[in-house]
Length: 174
Ligand code: IMP
Ligand code: MG
Image 1 (tube, rainbow, N blue to C red):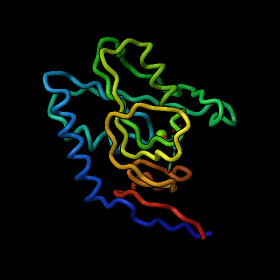
Image 2 (image 1 turned 90 degrees about the vertical axis):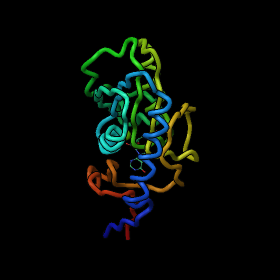
Image 3 (image 1 turned 180 degrees about the vertical axis):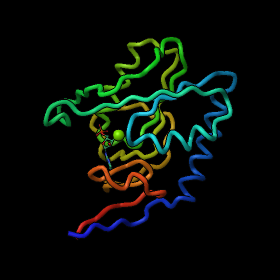
């Protein structure tokens, strides 16, 4: 079975959009320090590119979560594989994700982070598939809304591959 990747958002288009989001974030957080939290592994490429465009002070932390049990898609419970290194209490936290699909992972994660008493908690996602939403999630910054197709690249994987593509593509099989 051959895999094909068709370009959905080129590297130039993604870079330009990240620049725009960075400028908006710089305005919104003027006079503050942003504590960016990357959700591994998919959010890593986006967070690095975004962080380079931020001109207010930034600190970074990483966390890794995985779905609980065999069918977490229905339970919405996620297991923390790697927790944050630092406390987020009193900080202006910006969670950076690759994609929001059903919203289950993020809604669970945001609730857990809110319990840790940050000063503010916002969400930035590179991609959003609104038609797939099952659980409501408040998204503050979105790169692109995309249709319900399986995408790879810019951090997103298919079976752990394609994360390193410098663009966002739709994968198909034949
Ligand atoms: P959900 O929002 O809880 O359903 O799950 C979101 C997670 O599913 C993302 O962080 C990705 O890891 C994965 N995911 C959803 N859609 C895609 C896709 O099109 N390509 C690659 N991973 C995806
Ligand atoms: Mg992810």
